[in-house]
Image 1 (cartoon, rainbow, N blue to C red):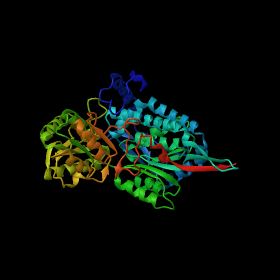
Image 2 (image 1 turned 180 degrees about the horizontal axis):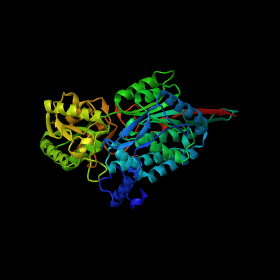
Image 3 (image 1 turned 60 degrees about the vertical axis):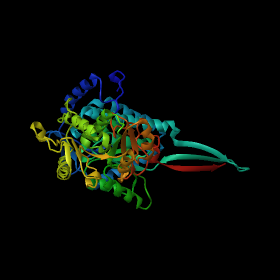
Length: 525
């Protein structure tokens, strides 16, 4: 963000932005409101595509705000998009990789240039506060640049190998990573720019063509992202955008034999089903599944409790807990438990909940009615079986009645309760007391998930935590977020166990090769 006097926006630096960021966001918000309510098409083969039916998308902040009308695509649109991407593959995959990167870098530059309006739209559509919205859009540009840089750094993943020692012959050897073909990207509602633009950028940099489907709740974000790629000069058919339900359009993508690989971000149940589908065809196809989390924070009696409380609250309630990396379990040593709870309650009760496009409001609404009902069921279970320290109620005062607002919640439950294991995707964090850090690590690991984890404690306790915790992203003594806040090149993001299918992380050095397959070439003169 070059127009903010050297300020570098990441999820770690977003808590004290320069005033200019707020001024620019306010101006963009006023501008973007004037574009609400439009009718939007899909994009297939470089052309607008319409379906027989459409659906209205309304803001979770206020159901009276019509974001726009979008196409309720079906299997036929998915098949047409796959066909268009298949036709474009030969030309795009043979385009010199430096030329591909030049187009993608233009797309990243356009996203960054439009960061204000894109972020304002994202805030209205998803209910993110302004800093998280700005952070996500900026991260999208950074992810695309990161994958382009890795391709360049590896010289297109093309290496010459030693000659075979054959008398009378010259046997030339070479290894190359080459694209698979048509790649599908199915993105979630909570990060509709970063978790679309990131994998799309990686797949395209590698030489694949792409069909991507956004969540219906964020069809507008997908449309705006698509426009940036198109305006960068991406050839027709190289990137195609379809909208519609997961049960129709998404299922058609997953089951089509011409999809060579897929990146999916969403629930464990759906991701696992996709992985099984991709393992059960004529041959095993690559499936990059980024799934859920039930992320734990361990707090030692030696911890800085101010840091711990700050990090826990930011990670538990940022984006209303609708992050797979959200802090949802806290295990604190008994000696520090009472004070930590008091600190968390104080910070929680100080959170301003409301329209997140308003600067003062840090927490916005849940994405839809189903999410609010899921929260309500969990709150009732906590009231019946445990203890509420804060929250546990729906918010419907005044203008909040028109949105899906709930109170951030801290509670305790018996260890055997099912909510200790279920990913709720809501602003709920459970706390339990432990006798030792070892006990906390054992409890943290006692889940099928392994996405993120946090620790607060003494220096001499850190190595033991890092050595034994079963999670792909870990944070120690971090007030900016106990379990959240990854950024390309700083904190790669990927899960172990049921949280991910590859063991590699978004925004890491090892991610881009997932979109390519190796070919060993020997030519004898």
